[in-house]
Image 1 (cartoon, rainbow, N blue to C red):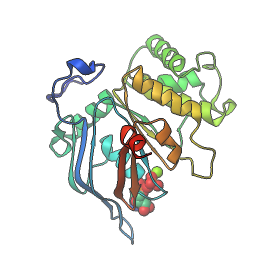
Image 2 (image 1 turned 180 degrees about the horizontal axis):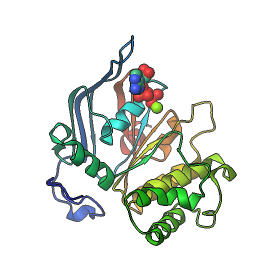
Image 3 (image 1 turned 120 degrees about the vertical axis):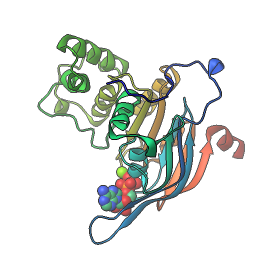
Image 4 (image 1 turned 180 degrees about the vertical axis):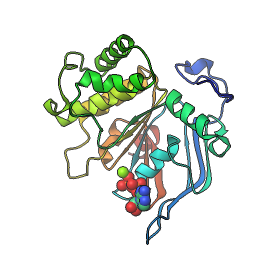
Length: 255
Ligand code: ADP
Ligand code: MG
């Protein structure tokens, strides 16, 4: 599907040749109210946030602070109730349903908090699925799935079933499935609680590698403050509001 949206290709553009452009993702006074049921919940309250191309940002906050709501908004899965969101300078309000879908498929890879791997399908089959849905030949899908599995270090595990893997490997498989369509932006919803083991070091270093070597913009939402170790920037959310926004350079200057 090719749609009439004026949006430049944002992938793999070297920094030195980047034109001056709007932030990749910009929330302006964005609020999200879920008003179904008896008790309406304000998941996000007047959030101003710019995410630039090439960043690795960790969005950190306790359960219920609005992390998933924010991620869905950034990925064009949900619209703000008030305020605005623009992706590469395009206001989401101006998009048709088809355009929104096209942008999501073209630019975003999602890693949902439960991974959502099909238990009765091999890893390779799971990773190939997004391409199968797009109607590519089985051969191309399988080849692309093997390549994506190799990027996350699971090249010799493709025949295994999800239940044969540990949590970190399942996370990597879900990342491979998000990578198979060659996204520019990876949105990762990490569900582990602060009491769980700290954000798995190999997932953290994999996300950093995807950011620095594959030039993918990464947004990781998590309860784990340790995510700041892998990201360049940590945005703290509380009660649907941005409490703090610290880049690594600024953080080291404080210490
Ligand atoms: P987090 O991911 O940080 O745990 P969420 O973004 O999932 O937080 O949720 C933020 C708030 O919005 C919570 O109070 C939650 O109960 C509420 N919420 C999230 N999704 C929905 C929904 N679909 N319907 C109603 N309330 C919701
Ligand atoms: Mg969540």
